[in-house]
Image (cartoon, rainbow, N blue to C red; front, top):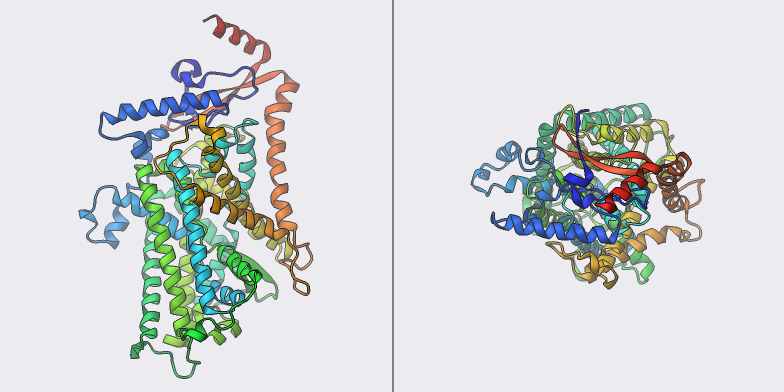
Length: 621
């Protein structure tokens, strides 16, 4: 790949080399490092304020738009440039302000990621844990409040560091010592958290049911493999069409869920055309004493239900008589746009509007869908039937013939979830390539040949296919899926803790002052909720009840979640400490500009003697 070298000392004076360390810290922000030292961190903040005052002459600021915070060319910012899908869906779009397409694309990126399959089956598990309809609805409201806390945390961080990468940027900015250890550890977690295996299997099962095809192991894996291949292909080679399909599925999902909610409310209101068919049990869930009947009296029941709202476990029985536990993250996905902010036009302004818009829409959909379910399906049916609650809903209102149509819709909903998730994961791996730490970093950092991060998407595709085809059903598969969910809880806990530190007196010198600041109580609540999710899996299950696994210990995935960080630590030590000492060199960083207009960093191995000579020359000058 042809690159143009940028001399660190001349073209980017804030990237002054620190010869006392093996690694010169940083990740690219406007061609400037996010340094791992407090002194350089202050220089960056001063530079940022300087660019803000310069841009003010044009009527905008870097904080308003955020595009100058990462030197991705404007034409490379894809979210906001594609209006075709919106013109098809919204005939009046041409009268909206120019930034609206980018706003809707970013909002749909979040909406698609949050709503997958959970809302169609999760309510029965929540009701089972809570005991009553009233407490179940309260749990959904509490889940929405926790998600709102998470949304505020990620808006705070996203407006302060408006570039692709999400938690990668936040962790390396906050946890600066040892240099690059946070980035190396996060790299390992990224491959685990970004796997699309579970959702591809769910997509496969519902699609096979929609076409009345027997869901054998071979059929399920084949369709799931084709799904993963399609997602990688369309986002890696046909970026604009990938966005169009993704946005169209999100809009379709929103419309259908709204219609389901509306029909349930009409049934509750007694409209004749929407009454429950007489051959099924008539629901009576909203009379006051029925509304609270069966409420759990202990905190244990409430906590169990709340945990299911946030990390819901869905047990799907496959034809080959084994159970796969797939974690449907009912409110997880609010950070999805943060992973692709370098491709958003006016990222600061967009994320401040798109994230609340998406999460308010999700919360309203969840609440009204649950009301619709309880209006149409009796509590006894929900608790005793082995079918998902959405299937019972369609059966009671429209008859059993609509069940296959429901399966088709759920498969499309899952496909939208997969497209949104992999779109973002490809950008995260690309940002790790731009960091210069990965082997063959230039390969992962490039947008060639299709102006898309094909290398990052293909890497995640290989990981997902490996989990899908090489990991046998049973405990091993359940362990990997549970490990993915648990790893995200760990990362969220560290991110929330880091943001609390940025607002503390000890970090005041870092001058963290983003365009949007989340209230400290909100950050604290989000931190505590993730502490709960991190440590609860270490508690043994109740006596007489099986844990997640048949043979593995119940604590396998939380211990594994902590253990995989050791791989990142080992790579960091080998690359940045042991090899430089053994071979007598130090690592110095240079910024280079790729011929696609995007910068990345490279590390040069400088013999120790030459580093000393450079230090003397710098001191004399």
